[in-house]
Amino acid sequence: MFFKISPDEIEEVSLLRRAETAHFVKAAEVICQFHQRDDYQSGRHLTKENKDLLHVNHYRIESKLNSSFSGNLNFSACAEVEFNALQPEQSWIYFYLFSDMEVDSVMWSTGEQASFFKEKENPYLWVHCQPALARDETRKLKLYYRGDLIENDGGWMVIKSSLGWYPLHGNRTYATFDLTFHTPKRMTFVSVGDNISSAVQDEVLSTRWVTPEPIRNASFNIGYFKKHEITDERTVPVTVLMAESGHQQIGQSLARQGILSGKSMEKQVGQDVANSLVFFSHLFGKPKIKHFYATETPISHGLAFPGLIHLAWSTFQATDDEGYDQIFRAHEVAHQWWGIGVDFETYHDQWLSEGFASFAGLWYMQIALRDNKKYFDRLKDWRDEIFSNRKFLFGSGQQAGPISLGYRTSTSTTAGDYGLIIYKKGAWVLHMLRNMLLDYLTMKEEVFTNILQEFYQTYRGQKASTLDFQKIVEKQAGKDMSWFFQQWVHATGIPEYRFAHKLEQTPQGKWVAHCKIEQRNVPDDFQMPVLVRIDFGQERFARTRVVVRGPLTRVDLPLMPMKPEKIVFNDLESVLCEVKNEKWVE
Image (cartoon, rainbow, N blue to C red):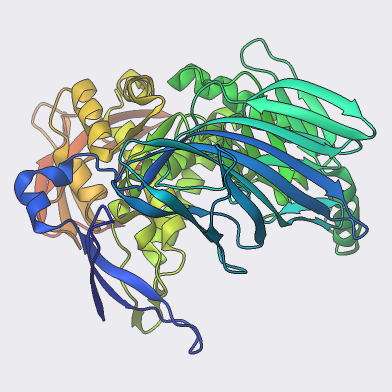
C-alpha cells in the first residue's frame, strides 16, 4: 500500500497499491482518491479547479511526411507553441510527446536556444525556463523534432500515436491550431479544421488546416485510400476514406475460410455516417463542423476528433446482421456532440462522452434498421455482460465500481470494466431515463429529447459535469432526480425483482391484478418506476407504471375491462435489472 499527498493534483490525497501485473513489472494503481480536507470544508471540491502549470493558447505546426525505402513515412515537424503560465516562478516546464520522438532543438521566440531534456523512449520533454516563468506571463517556444510515427502495414498506414505527434500539456485543455502538412502526392491526407489551401509541387502535396475555434485534440489520417463523397442538403459534406488495397489481402484470406466480404463497403459505411449525422443534428442540434471525414485505420476501435473520425478496419470489411456495425459507426459520429461538442468536466463525468455516444449509436441503429427487437436485444446483451461480470462457477470476483469512478473502474483486477461500466451501463442509464420520461399512452418522448437538446445547446464548447446534466433533467422533468443519479451513477446497486401477481374479478365484472414485488441486492431505500404491460390477446394491450420501493411492494393495477392473458413486468426493458416471475403465495 502507498499513501500519497500531491498538491499538484485536483484530488490531492490518494491511497495506492501495487498493481497485480507480471512479477517483473512494477506499477502502482489508485484504490481511492479524494480532495484535501480544506476543500470539502470550504466547498472548493464542488468548483472547477485547474492545476495545470501552463495553458497552451495556440499551435502552429509544420510537418513533413516523407516516404522511406521501407514503405514507412519519415515524420518530422517544427511546432511553434504559444502558452501562458498558470503558476508562479516556474524554472522547468514539461510537455508530453510520443515516446519514439527525438527532439533536435528547442528555442524561444527571441531566437535563444532553450535547454531541454527528453530521455529515449520516454514521453516527457522538459524545458528549462531562464529566467523563470512568472504567473500569467506569455511565451513562445519553437520545437524541432522527428520520429518513427507512421508504419506501412500491408496497405494500411499505422499512426502509432494519434495524439502524441505534437507537444501536449495540461488536463484536456483547448487551443487553436494552424497546421501545415507536406505529404506524398500519391497518398490521401486529411486533418482537423478547415482545409484553407492545397497545392502540389514536385510530387509533394502541401495542405493547410486551421481550426476556427479552440479544440482539445488534433489529429490526421493518411493512406492509400479509396474516396467516397456524400452530399446531402440535410447535413455537411461527408468524405469516406477506405484502404481498399488492405481489404483485398484480408478478403482473400477470409474467403479461404468461407467468410465473405461486404460489397461497396465505403458506401455502406458512408450511409451510416451521413444518416447518423442527420439523425443527431435533428435530435441534438447542429454540430460546429463544415466537413466530415470518416477514415479507416488498422486498429480495433474508433477515435473521434472535430470533423474527423478513425474507424476500425473491421467495419469496412463487412456489415454484421445484428446492428453492431451501425452502433459502432454512429457511436464515433455521436462524439461530435458528446465528448467534443460537450466535453466532460473530470474523469468522474466520462460517461457523458462514452455512455452518451454508446446510447446514441444504439438509438441510431433502432431508427436506421427500423428494428425495435435488435435495439432491445443489444440492450439485453449489455445487461447480461454487466450481470455476468466476474461471476464464476464457484463464486464471484471483485464488484465493479460506479459509473462516476470513470477510468478508475478499470484496474489490474477489474480489466475491461471501463468499457462495460462507462460505455454500456452508461448507455443503460440514458435508456432508463428515456423510459421514465416516456408518455406511455402516446409513446411520445419530447421530454427526453428536450433534455438532450438543452444539454447540448447549453454546454456546447464547454465542459459539463454529471450535476450539470442532472439539473437539466430535473428542469425538464419538473421534479427532483437526485435519487436516480445517486443510485445509477454514483452507486453500484442493480436490483433483482421477484414478481408475482393474482387476478381477481370484481362484482362489477371487471378484473384487478394484485401484484407483489420483492426487491433484492440493493439498499432498502432503492426505488424505480417500472413499466408493466397488460396483454389481452389479439394485439390488444395496455401499459402502466409501478413504483417499486423497498424490499417489498404490493400494488393493485388499474381495473381492467377484461381478463388479461399475460402481465409483463419491466416492459420495454425499462429498468436495468433481473426479473424472476414467481407464483403467487399468500
